[in-house]
Length: 323
Length: 316
Ligand SMILES: Nc1ncnc2c1ncn2[C@@H]1O[C@H](COP(=O)(O)OP(=O)(O)OP(=O)(O)O)[C@@H](O)[C@H]1O
Ligand code: SF4
Ligand SMILES: [Mg+2]
Image (tube, rainbow over all chains, first blue to last red; front, side, top):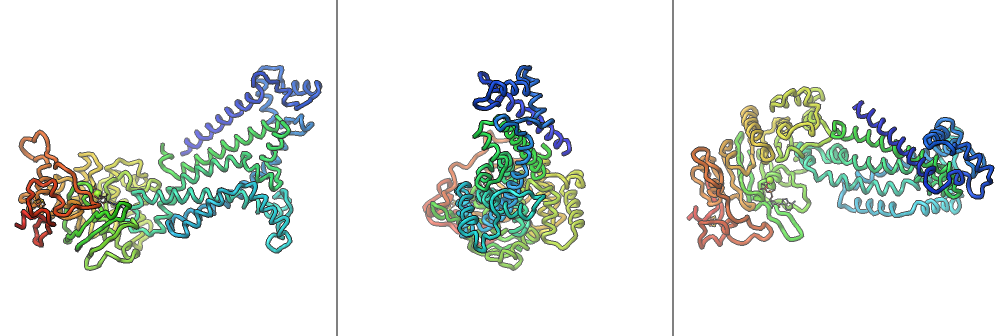
């Protein structure tokens, strides 16, 4: 177990290294382009270009360039944006991380809790109208575009019904630091959490129901019945427990992607300066250092999320543990 | 102790009703071993799942009567059936590879059953589990309780399933082809084990198998099933020495003799059992029967005696 854990961590570090090299090569060694010109941005003056060349060591061998880059991103953190005139990239990215994490963590808690409830209740009442209604609602949740849903939420809570008792508690858009104002942090995030999680509640609820219903067909469920266990116990201890593997796999992928910037649309609608929003703005400006840094951080999050999923696997499935 | 009368199980399907079990009647006495034989699809599993109350298909229609020690099980409340299941009536399944929940240790799974039926401490349930594992000849029971199913071989897993079935000292044990999925040598060990346990626990056993050789070794009385019906029943000796039904005779011809020279090829019964969806009128075995005659276009009934068969050749 400990060995497997260490092995997994080593593997994770190796993958991260690989990603960093790959990202570096894509950005700086694509043949036929001048990385300095791209970093400097459109219509840069020759002086700026020269400054870029020097600062990134473009006259030096490739591996030195790579090391310089990594040093700038991870050690000294003094990578600067030329498009945005001297903006320090790493602090800018760091500032966005708590925003994105707050958004995604909160939504993830909501979606896991509600998807579990929906999946279990629907599987327990399979075939009944309760099941059908829940699955229908899930389908509706899945098919609502998050951007549209966010706009509707804003329209209701910020404009139309803002002065009624239902939504008068909703603060204006934007992010509040948890350390400065925990209550404000919570209140500004409630609606974004709900908006972001609805899709996943629908999706995960349906996936979980399907997995439980499939588990219920297994031979070991018949054994469990033959043992004289109650239906509730069979459902929760046997069918649900063996269905969690599918749930966790999906969760790891989605969670990693969201933390890595896929919460972009939600961040944009609700004016949250998160990683997704930052990447989005950088893409609009072709701000190469920011794009590169966010891509790196984002892929690291995905890799870490995957490693966490693998560890969860080991906890959930003894067959993986000893393999 | 078990009295099954006119048990029928039919499944509603898109093509119509599948009469998997049709008017089956049999008894099991205290401590007796009843062997149930018949080809694949003859309704052996379904009829005993019905006894266990384990037919969960909502399209199943179950009629008839199943009395266990005077209590009617057909239509019993689920809660009462649950209290019997695993405690008084236990079941061993055919495939030990899939019969255990993969994510729990075998000890946990056995103790779970004990704790579901008896008010004893966890420690006591755990001790009982270890004793049971020892009883079914699992080496190092103290360590093996912590193993997961995938860490054990098929034979070991079947021992675990047997230990689980015995955990509450059931009065009736239903074993559905408990050795079919195992290697021949392991099969013999499991059979020995079942014989030993039967002596120690005194449970009555209903033993389902395809294998007449196995029957010859362990059964007291036998039930031969064909196409969802009982075609012959009687004491094992009677059945082996004086089989009445042509189907039973054909089954006996298909086992290799224990002594003497082996025939080059075993005689398989030509033809296939009838479609249970629309069963043709008359004796279900008629299309494959070498002794069929005019009368066989009607439906033969099982007689009432100790040794009887559903065949016009017998009653005539
Ligand atoms: N849920 C179901 N729906 C429809 N038909 C079913 C269902 N369960 C069983 N059957 C049918 O009932 C018949 C009897 O099956 P059963 O499993 O009792 O046979 P068996 O004698 O145990 O055979 P085997 O030796 O292969 O285990 C089969 O033809 C099967 O297709
Ligand atoms: S009733 Fe007729 S067809 Fe059926 S088994 Fe007897 S002899 Fe054969
Ligand atoms: Mg069967």
